[in-house]
Length: 448
Ligand code: SF4
Ligand code: SF4
Image 1 (cartoon, rainbow, N blue to C red):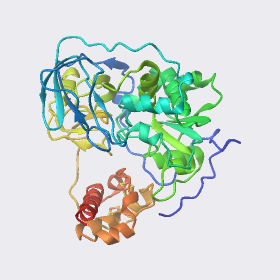
Image 2 (cartoon, rainbow, N blue to C red):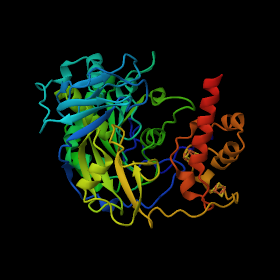
Image 3 (cartoon, rainbow, N blue to C red):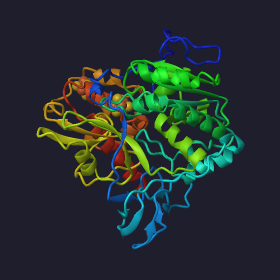
């Protein structure tokens, strides 16, 4: 990886945090954002589903084992599956009802009417130890809600000898179309800040910075008001650029620090957590509320009424789309997540999981894809890559099964952001080729 130069147009305060000008990083792209479709739609709680299918594995790590059996009555928020493995996260009933079925991969619950979660007596997190906070985060099944779904309690547990200096809250939401984090920052700024404080206590970090792309003015305003009584927490505007929300990019933009190749954010003293995850952590620790629902953006030209919705985990995409007026006649593709890092869904029976940040329905016009042509060696993919990699060379390695060569070119540092795909004039499916190559490398490793 080529080392990126420190940007001269960023001002760092005496604490090392960018303070006056916006933070940015090298590489990246400026795609069509299309956020106007849902940006002004306030958070809305979707009607409760009559049936949910709660997957046993919604996170990076070991899958959970069911704690309930067919025919059991469950209440919303009840833990229904867990694993003893540290890198794992329990799952909870998202509605009250009866377990109708346990398939290999999910617990299916049929509802028995309205099921509101009753919070435990509010807890003063300041009276808790760091260990108790991490345990509460784990017990509530909190994972990264930005899409990665990595268990948050694992992130909060540094390898021996490492310490956290900063909690960085990721409010960049740089994926086109998605606006759920923006609405959370506008409408729940106090809870975002509560999340920052809970996480700071949970990892022993003395400072926190909330990074927000500078075009999200209402969010910046709400957050600045909310942090005004907490001098240890600051709000920093970021350049509007994709993938500003990538962990390594955010650290570079906010702290001017570079995570070493193969390293972790904690190597430079940072814990990076999405703003929605921070709210979930605050709810878990102060109210004992598990992660049984989440906010998502339902948007795209292919959905009749774009919305920012709070939905129960395990509800089907079909039901969510129906709540939003249904698909437009010219919708041709549905994506889980955003257009750059999301994944096309095969069936609308697929359900919302903890890592679902949005449901995007694209029209033929929005999804248009030109025919692939040969590489013209223009180098645009290399210029756009925020990780300073060579996507064009990965494509060659992938097509010719040159796995060692791909490893030598550091393919494992690719964050699959899609910048190279986006800029390629020859429409070469670079991310698809990179993912395939990585999968082949993994398969070879397992076979060995
Ligand atoms: S997908 Fe990977 S190779 Fe392509 S631009 Fe992003 S980090 Fe670079
Ligand atoms: S952007 Fe596309 S055409 Fe240009 S060098 Fe990269 S892969 Fe080749």
